[in-house]
Image (cartoon, rainbow, N blue to C red):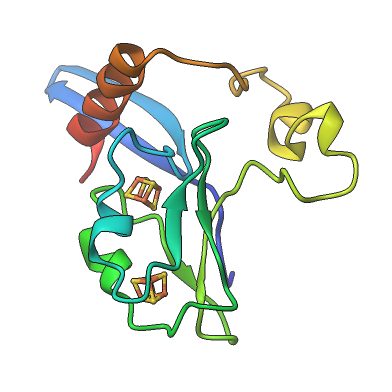
Length: 133
Ligand code: SF4
Ligand code: SF4
């Protein structure tokens, strides 16, 4: 219900009777070259040099939704405030030194927070893009 910072895709592959299904949890990928930032008319989105987090300044956002059209992964969310929201790794939340709550509470240990090289990040983006419906 409402704004979703992560969503789970059910991915089906193959053809009957060799069919496989698995689940993929998708949030903002904090892209190497974020397409959302490139189309923002007011520069409300930027990639932080220090840690690569793609940050949205909701004081600047005018709610045009250009970023939603541009994001290959359908990440940008718009709640009642009308401004863009998405995963920011919870870096401004109390307790952030323990990592994002989604990572801490995943019972299967499927989520992790780690630093990737640019090549690893690009490969990850490519994999996720191939799974998009
Ligand atoms: S909102 Fe989409 S395009 Fe922007 S950084 Fe996140 S995944 Fe990449
Ligand atoms: S909705 Fe906000 S963040 Fe997205 S492109 Fe428009 S002004 Fe920028």
